[in-house]
Structure formats: structure tokens, C-alpha cells
Length: 213
Figure 1 (cartoon, rainbow, N blue to C red):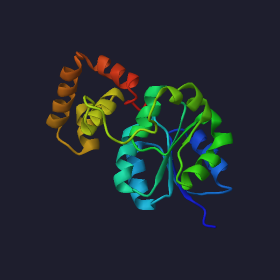
Figure 2: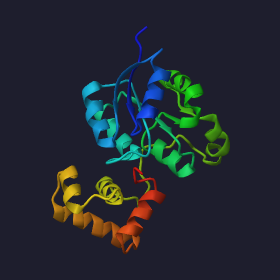
Figure 3: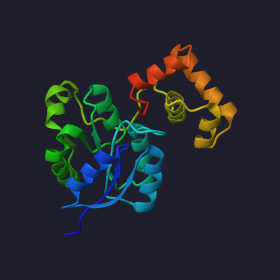
Figure 4: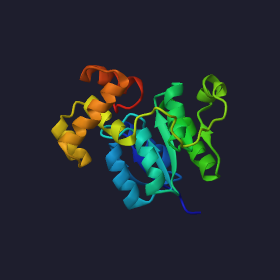
């Protein structure tokens, strides 16, 4: 039987090594990357069957990366492996198209089972979350549609990079847009949210799961 091809995205080498050890008896780990933008490139090149990713990643967080993966590799199944158990993160992951959600502290016991379930066309969620959170959220897993009032993808990109401390010049280079456009998006977001400083914008990013920190 062909082993599923897995791509790992996590910015901590120790975590990546641990996930690799768990997977390798039954899966082929085809690559590992450390940020959301590298993940998009690697996914398009490697065409994995399964993508494991964290929510908190630099340059492009896991939730926003997952939204794009559906277009890049529509056949790949996405499993979040993360420390975040809060309902905001869980619902955000499923809205982004996740097939599975595993807490890092449970990965050694649950990850292979999650892979098997998802390859059978099912959804897997760490039982701890199902008990404590998801039972309170009717209708999960949620679809990929965004709720009204959310920031656009480009606005979220700019907010994350601002929160990570990148300058307007650096953000323009990363996103391949003009500095004027970066400043326009930042200003629009701050005005829309009633935020008056970069520090407040960074706090917003952290509280809403946009920052990779």
C-alpha cells in the first residue's frame, strides 16, 4: 500500500523532528518548512497528500495559509497541529478548510490516527477539544466562507507582517506590492478597527490569531 506523502510546516525544529518521527513508520515525509509563505511554495512543488501545519507561523500564519492551499493543492488534506485550544483558533481552522485539528501535546498518541481518519474522508479533532469546546459550537466543522466584517486576505497579510515588526519597505518586498499600497492597507485597517497605533494593531493581531507569534 502506498504511504501517504506528508508536508510539515512548523517554525520549531524540535517540533518538526518530533512529528517526523511519529509519521515516518507509516508515511513519507516529503518536506518541512518554517513559515507560511514557504509552505505555499513547497505545497505547489511537492503535491503532498497531507499537510501538517501550525497556526502560529511567521510571514503568513497557518489559517491564512490554509485558505490558499485549497486552490494550490485542492486534493491535499490539511491537519492543524498546534498548542492553541481556544474556540477562536479551532473555528478559524475549520473555516479555512481544515480536515483535522490535533493539539501538540496529544500528537504522539493521536497524529497517526488523525491521518488514517482523514484519508478515509472523515474529520478528526482532538477529543479534548471536542469535549470542552466543539460541543458548544453547533454545525462544526464549519465551511470555508468568511463571516461578514472580517479583514480581507491582503489586509490580514499586512497586519501580520506589521505585528511581526517588519517595516513598510520590508512588507512591500515580501508581498510584492508598493509601499504606498502597504500604507493604504494599514491605514484602512486601523481606521476600520478604531486603532490608533502600531502597538494596538499588534495587540489586535495577537488576540485574533493573525500574528505568527
